[in-house]
Structure formats: structure tokens, C-alpha cells
Image (cartoon, rainbow, N blue to C red):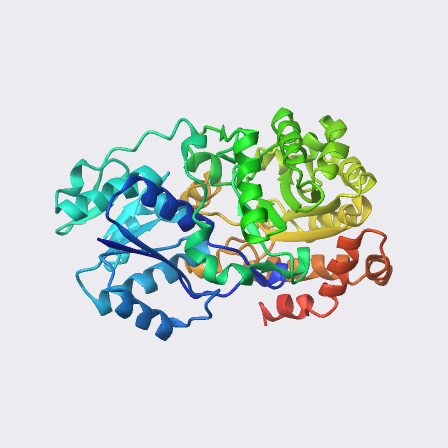
Length: 475
């Protein structure tokens, strides 16, 4: 029995510049499968790292001759790529079992199986145990109907087995299978954040989120539960990346790991492992967490936290209430200042395009962003991803004017506001970036900042043509 995991060919999200992350999701699945299923041959093929186009992928499938083909499905905008990869596998061998998973296909299981005949099975939700059972079942040629957590086609009928219970102890999972991509691991990078030679890996500290933001698919995908790994387990993963593979830049990918006791314990474990001065890590955090737990920031910086992405989202209390964000916009400036005071690069994310947005309210957001003065600002368009409350509401009210999944990337407008068309929302996004990055004083101070990450970031951005790329979206 052979399983081929594939990261299909795809274009990167240009807003963050050049980056190539390891395919963390399938590395975790491959590692679990290796541990739990005997006599299974596993291959992980990363088309980005190996610079394979679709013809190259087809040749590799022909060479590998897998029994099961599992393409990575990171985000909604990649859904078509998963279907195309599965179609390619079926063209090579119609008997290959094609398997998709992830948040998009979990939320659209019925629709996707009817829309993409090249996909045989969808693994819903948490995939490790389900995929292991699926592989064993296929090997024994037994019925799929007894496997919890899958959706599959039975003749012309789409069947959904009961949900699988979530894994209670995330520490029981094996470390991600970076050994499957060891031959290309030196190619992973995030140019803007870490430069060319630091390497790049993703670290999962928890699954789910205790919050309930209407635009986020995380908390519904994980059934409203937040489960964290122990600090020791997370530190072990960081040490694996650094000591075994020389990777120094690590992204703690959790939507909300938080800055409470769990971060304090993690920092203590990193320091205990002696790698705090050797690595740089990056996390996503809420403004209220920064203000509430500001005493943790010096320890975090000493343990290698160099970069924080802060969900500021909007200046309007009404907009924040509609997102169910439960933060005070007054905390945004304080959060930015606290991060800078502790020599942590402060990146803010902002959202435009909610139903009540007008040209005036978005102009107010631009002024607010300039006032709180983050080191870096990323503006995004409110996007109704399948599996979110926002999607359900937008679909119910007929707001969605774009059904091309490839454009669900937060830089293409999907829904209009009450007063702005999709195109006008798109134009406002460009104006947001122009307002922030068009400032000569900001560019000058960034290029000569005392913070080395800020200097590197602004020197990198100077040659990227971000504004032109955004302008081209609506031309």
C-alpha cells in the first residue's frame, strides 16, 4: 500500500512577498500514518519546493504509482488546485483513491463531492485517525461506511459517516514528518520576515479557538473547542526544526495561542532548551491579550519572539461587534507601543468591506491605522469563507457576488457593502495600502529603523511592487 501526499503547484499570496512554507498539514498526517499503520509506503511531494509544474506532477504520479493520492488543501482559494491534482491522478490511473480534507472541504463536503467527481473521499475535520483507518480499510478492501469522519460517493449518492471525536491529547501526536521533505528542506523560506538563510517552519501549538469571530472558520471547524499542546511538546517541535534541520525562523500558526500562562510556560521551556538566542519565532495575538499580559513581553522577546501579528481589524466598535471580536479599538495603539517597547516587530491586520462600510468609514480606518502606527499593516477584504457564520449569513441574504473559489483570498472582493460595489471595495483596498506604504516618512524610518527586522522588511518591500500588484487586480 502506497500513499502519495502532494502539495500541488500554486501561486503564493503576493501581499506577503516571497515565501515557501513546508506543507505542515500533510507532514503531520504522514508522520501519524507512519507511526500507526504497518507496511505502508509514504511519499510527500512538494511541487513548490521541487519546482514542479502540472506536467512534472503527472510524471511523478506515474513514477510513484500510489494506491492513495492525498493533495494538500490549505485554504478555500486552493480548492480548485486540489480538484485539478486529483483529476491528474485519475488520468494516470483511474483506480487511485483520491482523498481531500481540510477546512474548506469539510465545510463543503456534499457540494464538493457532487461538483468534483475526481475526488473519491473527503476526510472531515481532524484527519490523523480518520486517514489511518481509511488506509487500513482500503488495504483490506473493506467497506468505507464504518469509518467515522468521512464523506464519500456511493453510486450516485453522497454518504456522510458520523463525525469522529476530537483527539483529547494533542501531545500524543508524533512530531511532524520533516524527514519526508529533508531533501528540499533548505528551500523553505520567508524572505520578508527572516531573510534568505534562516529557513522556515510552521509550529502548531493548539487547535481551535476560544473566541467566536464571525469571519473565522477555525472555531467552527474545531467544534467550538480549544485544545493546546503542552509547552514542552511545542518546544520539542521547535528544537527538532532548529537542531535537526538548522531552521531558525518559526511561525506559531495558531489563530489565537494567547499570551497567558501557556506562553509563559513555552518561553521558559525554550530558554531551558538553550535555543532562545538562536531562533526567531512569530505568533498571532489579540490586542487585549497584549495589554492584559504585557508583563510577559520581555520574557517572550528573550525566548526568541521577534514578530507579532496583531488582529486590530477595525477602528469602529460597531464593526468589531458585528465581527463578534470583543476588543476595544482604544487598546490598539497601546498594543503597538508595548510591542515596539520590547523590540518585537508589530504587524497589524485590518479588515475593510463589512456591510456598513462606506468610503468615509474606510478613510477613517486609514487614519486610524496611521495613528496607531504599526511597523507593518496588512489590509484585507472581509471574505465569507465556507464554514463561517459570515458565509451562512451572506449566502442567506444573497450578498455573495463571486463564486470562484480562487478569489477567496482576502484581496478580492466577494460581497459588496450597502453603499459600495465589489469594484469600489477593491479600489479602497488599494487606497489603504497606498496610504500606509506611500508615506515617505514611514518608508524612510523603516529603512533606517533600529529594529533589524523592520529594516530588512522595508528594504525588501522597496523592491516588491506591492501597490502595482494591487492596482492590477481591478484593471
